[in-house]
Length: 84
Image (tube, rainbow, N blue to C red):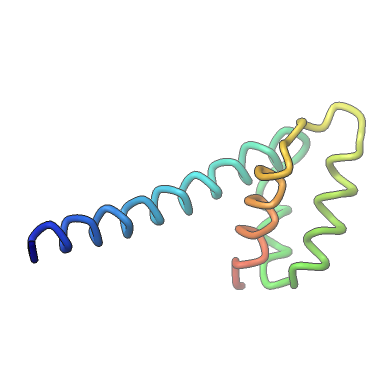
């Protein structure tokens, strides 16, 4: 039973790490559709409201990638969590 619980806990941790890595990949892919990611990295450390406004502005532009609500939230969450 103990090994089963440890296995489940490990699976949950790995799934969380995979999701975080997926969010970074999604953010990089989304942002680099229009510009270099260095531009985004220069804004790391800004709060969630700032990222929501910025991402909203960028996604409203012609030629911007189309994201689902869940993808948009994942990108904003990931960007807001980054520190300088």
